[in-house]
Amino acid sequence: MEKLVDEGKAKSIGVSNFNAAQVARILKVARVKPVLNQVECHAYFQQRKLERVLLKDNIRLMAYGPIGSPGSTAALTVPGESPPPVLLADPVIAKLATKYQKTPAQILIRNLLQRELIVIPKSVTPSRIRENGNVFDFELSPEDTAVIENIDTDQRMFKYHIMVHAPDFPFNIPV
Ligand SMILES: NC(=O)c1ccc[n+]([C@@H]2O[C@H](COP(=O)([O-])OP(=O)(O)OC[C@H]3O[C@@H](n4cnc5c(N)ncnc54)[C@H](OP(=O)(O)O)[C@@H]3O)[C@@H](O)[C@H]2O)c1
Image (tube, rainbow, N blue to C red; front, side, top):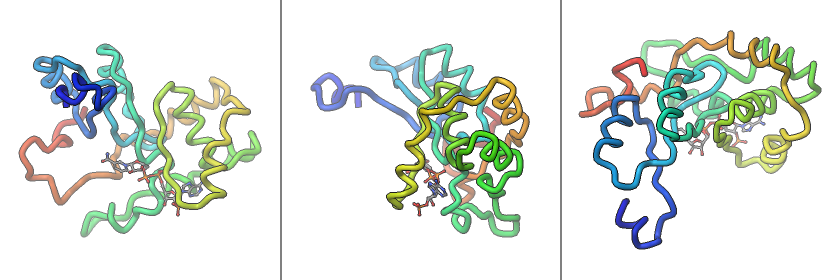
């Protein structure tokens, strides 16, 4: 990847699903350091600790699954466990959606943007793509962002359980 940057074929390098120890490890050897780490991040899994670790090295956190990945429930369900919670149906988020006259998805996306994270909601539905982009005409108050901070459960939805025994599996440690 560094060679691609040298050759002008890539502008910068990003990593994904790296834990804090893996970020530290790559920074020790990188000549071109990664500019971002793409990880699961949403109101139920806010990644505040990893965010702080990354900030120290000026690495941005890119939030995947920002509205709770409602289309992936089957894939995310670990056999024998309950399916992941439906973030879009959270009552706290629903209340804020009513207050700001926005949709739950817009509240969730706006909250991550106000944390200055990079947010990548995905949709194949044109109306939802427009909806998800329509988040720049309102601002959540500090009191309301604090309310959202309180619904963090610190539980991943993306457990990648089939890879749990892989070398360097990143989620065996908390951050
Ligand atoms: N690096 C990784 O390991 C990793 C892991 C997971 C995801 N990602 C990436 O992160 C991005 C987003 O993650 P994600 O797709 O899992 O999660 P997401 O953006 O939280 O959720 C996407 C799902 O929500 C639905 N949706 C989108 N906007 C909506 C809205 N306004 N109201 C109701 N439903 C809405 C979509 O349905 P429709 O498409 O049917 O509209 C889709 O099923 C993707 O680009 C993905 O490739 C990376």
